[in-house]
Length: 187
View 1: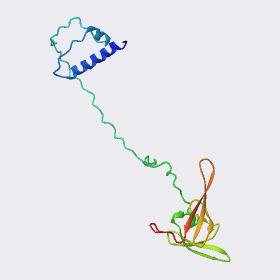
View 2: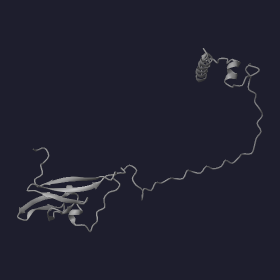
View 3: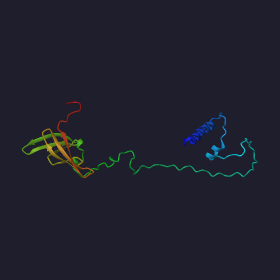
View 4: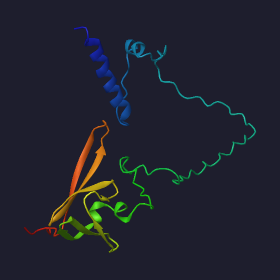
């Protein structure tokens, strides 16, 4: 096998690592061939040497440079977007205060209070969250997305909102506001 010397070196390396990691383990002699393969120095004399104490010359004390403290970093979020907020929800709609009240209010916040019909057709009474009522008929603009009333019946009214997707296709969403909305949990 051609990989046999590599496996032997790996096993020897593991054994040496275990021996060096244990305090009570006996030291194993390392063959010169392994030392040359691992680029370790090969000593001419393998007899243990006793440490020799060298005379120490006294030098003048050296002043060590004083380490400066790290500057305190403070994050100021003013004028920056919240990194944990969705990018899609960043562009909240700002409603023009000069628009009529029905066009400054979300469709879900509007309430259909009553419907009147006769020879003139259908008209409806819509209430805003502040309690004010407005008479509307077909073609009246409602909601913050430029919706237009397309149908009024004795039970509800329909508002169509046009939108353009990222591909340029126009979509029409129809929202129905009922005169007597069904309560949750009842049929």
